[in-house]
Amino acid sequence: MFTGIISGIGRIVEAEPLGSDASYGKRLLIETPPGYLGDVQLGDSIAISGACMTATRIDADSNRFAIDISGESLDKTVGLDRPGAVNLEKALRAHDRLGGHLVTGHVDGLGIVTRFVQVGESWDLRIEAPASLARFLAYKGSITVNGVSLTVNSVKDGPAGTEFSVNLIPHTLQQTTLGGLAAGQRVNLEIDLIARYVERMLGSAALPAPG
Image (cartoon, rainbow, N blue to C red; front, side, top):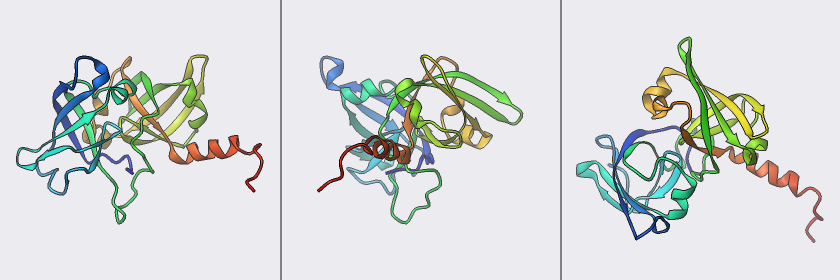
């Protein structure tokens, strides 16, 4: 479990194929900020740009760790198949503050950036989400973009999907990779966990009660 509060910006420095085609997945070597791996153990979960992965090798002295990512995960995410900057978040501990919202690290779909412009001292980021996620997006609800917990400022349904907007303050741009986004780029999206359960409960309302 995560919160969507990014704890460091890392970089994929190597993406080694694990087989002859994409279905075999890849082994990623990720470089972290100095000291980031001091409390990380083998097998710990780390969210990488919103996708929960398991640390399979740790070299704290060189500030690097490795993960194995399946072909299925590569097919359902973006930004994890090649070298480049990534958002990092360690798994939530029971005594940690919940600064963002409850995040599972399971990417629900890919969005496309439609607008990213500065408005005053902040930035207006607009993303078109797949139609399948439309019912989970609500004004002032929560959404995770590339692992970052954000608040939805507006929602506009269209024939191809739903465009939503979020406001990014300078601090968010400095502490995450979101500052490098541009119109046309794809991003990892995770819907709010509570919205997921509400949808399931409402969909089950017509079913007979157990017993």
